[in-house]
Amino acid sequence: MYEVTIIKSFSAAHLLAEIGGKCEELHGHNFKVEVTVGAQELNSEGILIDFRLVKKWLKDILDKMDHQHLNNLPFFAGKNPSSENIAHYVYREMQAKTKTSGVAVLRVKVWESENAAVTYSE
Image 1: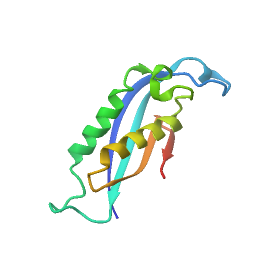
Image 2: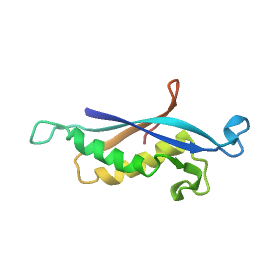
Image 3: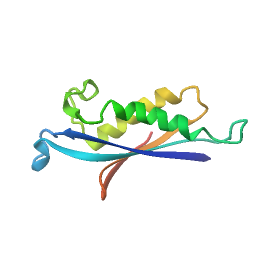
């Protein structure tokens, strides 16, 4: 299995309802997102996928959240915009973008601080 991982960041605010503590108040993070895609075989050029393409896909997804109040975004309607739900959202969006690329999304990791991260995979 070959894997490519791309890391990008975005900044956003959110509040997490009904979990208790300070996180129920509006606060922000500089999130770091790692997306890993993979496949068993390389393409005809001898690479898994062009890094630039995966970077563009991730940028397009994160641009929708960058400098936003995540609770107000439609894709988080009715749910907490937690790091877990951010990872799930990015995973689903990346799945849609990789459909015809020859690679699959393996995992998405979202860091909300330098020492706290969540990973989502299927």
